[in-house]
Length: 91
Image 1 (cartoon, one colour):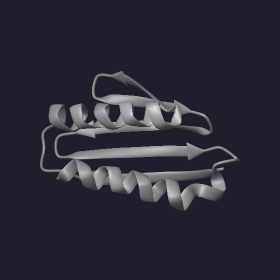
Image 2: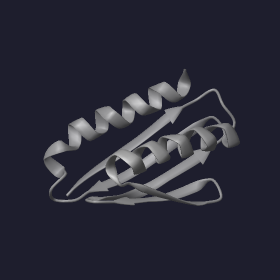
Image 3: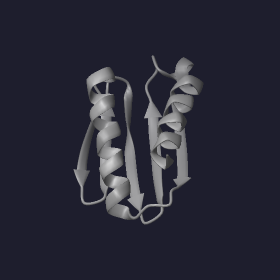
Image 4: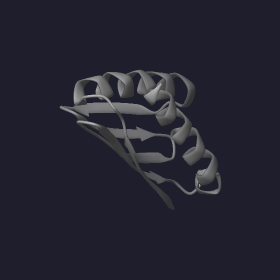
């Protein structure tokens, strides 16, 4: 299994970052079946072959993901797509 740990600084407050993360979560749910279960400003992430957490703080967002056996060969692609989503959050 592979792991992905990402942290991005954003010029937004905690509530703004969470609202954007929820929109990304909705898109990922539609496209890939990934679900975000929010508890305050943190979310558990689960889906086919992926589990992890999203942590929202003032000025930053962090992701810790574990990819299952079938997604491990696609770790670099998954990491690039997540990075792209996070870059779009800053725009």
